[in-house]
Image (cartoon, rainbow, N blue to C red; front, top):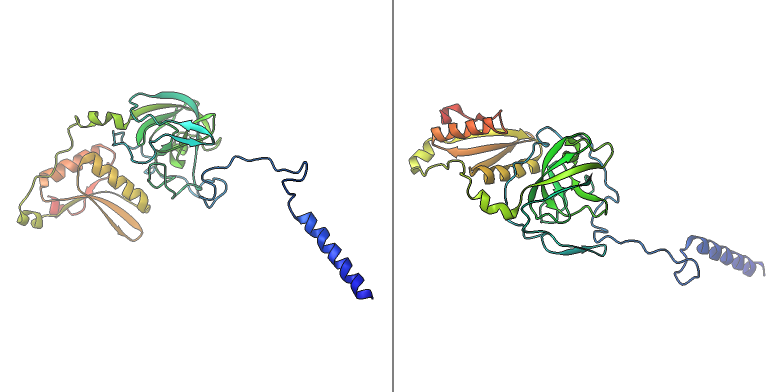
Length: 295
């Protein structure tokens, strides 16, 4: 007769612990959980909270991109709604200036797609804005330190009422706002898709003339601009340079480095012109890979 009593006692203990560990039901009076604001990106990222990377950006990674008017991206320029708030991107914008709070985003979003379909690189000079056309270029100035950076806007955000722009890790470091996390800034539009007609009036760098097959085989002159370990950054710069300068480009990888080369060309005079222009621009360390092929 003792066994049924023991079993009954054990069953009561199980019920007690189950009641303590279970969540209260929503229909119990006074126990309903408050509704939380659900992000459309819930479950998209591996990290719950954003964080800094394990290293500082390099000088090359903090190089300001050259502002240029690019075609409007297919993605990220339609009206959208976040947290019940409607946003209307200003695709035809040619002038814009605002003052407000800037924040930055890093590890949590690194490697994920931006609103216009590109891959976010926290070491690139990019930014997110709620309504500026994608892509566009802006100058962001820290009003407390007067430090500034030029960034390419290719993403949407920040979706905080008191913030106007979200900077990449490199851009935030460049304007001195990492320690506080936010900064009061001035945002100035430099180039937008609506200015594309203005870019067409700019005289591009002289293109390589068409040469005979024998001439192309005779010389293969290359100019090396840089060698870095970040393959994604190397390819990003390759696209920018090829588009900006209208020159052939090539990336050669080896020993953990990715070298960006300009060329090939069999025209030695043109090669010298290219080298001079890159050296007087953003790449003073540019050099001929093989002087015999370029001299």
